[in-house]
Length: 203
Image (cartoon, rainbow, N blue to C red; front, side, top):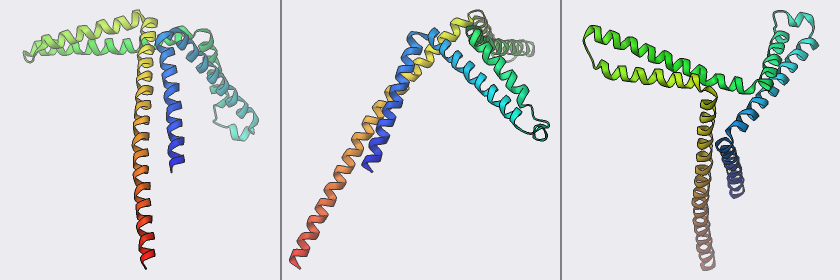
């Protein structure tokens, strides 16, 4: 049991160390992290597409009926190449999509404001403020898409660092508690063994 707990402890510490390292990289040099992630995704897509096409070609024609492995493979390879050559542009699309969704949410709130004012109920001014904030934030995401992507990556890096540090603290705390538990258990076993030996001698 002790050996298993020790193994789990080291696995947790190694994982936590990996989180911290990735978090520091994402926090300090987010642009490098973005490019690295983009290249990895591109390579994986190309490999997956190649495997899909090869599997399609190796199967008999009767087994490929209504299968789209070859076409999906081509699309996957094309998207992977796009990732490799336009990684920053693709990464910048994520905040743009999020920005469009945020703007749409703000526009829906503006419609709610109009309805509330026309019907004459509720605090429509507060909803109007929220709607304006929604639209402004969404527009900022769309205009500064790459900066927003780097900022989100830095936030993710901070989260990874926090997760790694707290994992380390929790691991050491639990290891200390487990050591105390097993020490107490061994002490009880030793006391029980001594009592049994004394009883045996008396008999």
